[in-house]
Image (tube, rainbow, N blue to C red; front, side):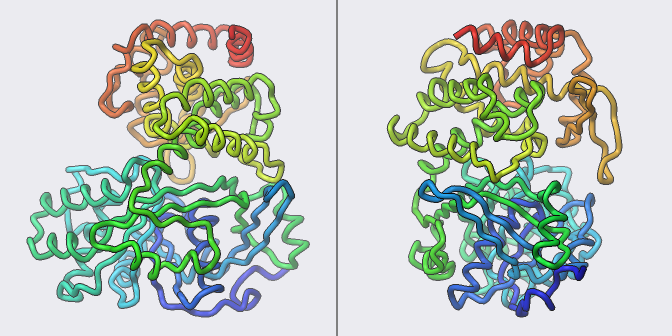
Length: 500
C-alpha cells in the first residue's frame, strides 16, 4: 500500500507564511486544518512549516509523508451525526530547532513569513534566567528561541516595519500573547540586545491573545489499519478530532481588528473564528468549564478504571462528579451570567458524550500539575473566597492528582525519563516537566500527611499560593489520600457521590 504523500494528495507548493512551534495532534487538527480550509476557500495561499522545539521525538514520519496527513472530524451538528475526512496539505515542511538549526533559522527569516503559532503547553511560556546564551543553537526555552529568531529576522531585514510578525500562541494560560511578549522583553534585557530591536518588537510585532477550543483524541490506534485500507493508502499521521472547533483571536495595539480579519480571512472561509478586542469572557468560560472539568475528573476516573472520556460520562459516579463540579463549584465563580455558563456547560457535556471521539484519559493527563493551576485553581480559590468553605469535588481533584502522580518506578520514554504509576497492577506513564517528576519521585512515597504538606505548600505548583494555609484543606486531603491508598480510588469516589 502506498504511503500518503504529495503524489496522492496533489498538494501544491505554497510560500511559507506560518511557522508552527509544536508537531502535536492538537495543532495539526486545529491550526493546520484552519489554514488548510482557508487555502481552499480564499486566496490566502500560505504554507505552514512545523518546528519541533525540543530534543525529544522525531519528525521521521512527517518527512516520509512529505508532511501530508489525513484528518477525520466526527461529532454531532444540530443533533445529527457528521463526519468529515480531509487530507491536510497546508504543512509544507517540518524541521527540528535543534538538529536542523540552520534550516529552522532560514524559515524564520524568510521573506514570506508572517505568522507564528505555538502550543508548548501551559509550562512552555516561561522566563528562565538560566537561558542566558543568545548564541545558543537554539536557546532552551520557547520564549528564548523566539527572541533569538526575531532578533535574527530584525538583523536580516534591518528593522523593516513590514517584516514584523503576528504571533498567535495557543497555550492555555491567561493572556498568552501578553505573557509571551513579557518573556521576550525580559530576554532582550537579559541578553543585552539593542534598543532598536526592542523598539522593532514593540512597534511592528503583534502578540495576539487567543483562545482555542477543540477536543482532539489524536491518532486512532484501534481503527488506523481499517481506515488506511478504506482510503487505499498508508498514513502514519492520521489525526482525529471532534467537529466542533472555535478560535477566538484578540487584536493588539499594533494591529487594528479590521486588518487582523483581512490578513487572516478565516471568516471568509466559513470557519468558526471570532476576532475581538477582548477575549477574556470567552477564555474564562472555556478554560474553567471545558478544560477545568477535564482536569478535575480525568485522573480520578482513570484510577477508578475508566480509559476515555465517553466511558467516564457513562459511569454514573463520574458523571455526577463532573456535573457537581461544573454546576455547583465552577459556574458560581464565573463572571458571565449563570444562564450563559450553564448553556455552555450543557454543550460541553454533549461533546464529552460524543461516541466518535475516543479521548484517552492518559493523553489528557499530560502536564496535569500546571493544567490544574491554570484551569482549576481560579475556581477553587474563587469558591473558597465566595463561600468560605472548601469545594468538595475540586478539593478531591487535588487528592486524585496526587494519587495519580504517586510513582512506583522510573523508566525511559521517548528519549527522556518518566515515572511509572500503578493502577490495579497495570503500569502507566506519568508525563510532566522534570521538576514536577523530581518532586513526586522524592515525595509521593511519604506518609499521606507528609506528602500532602509537601505538595500543598509548594507554591511553584499554585501560582505562588500556599494551599496548605487554606482553611482545613491539608487535613481533608490527607484523609482522602489515606483512604485512597487503603481502599482504592473506585471505592472512595463511590462514597464521595453517596455523601451528597
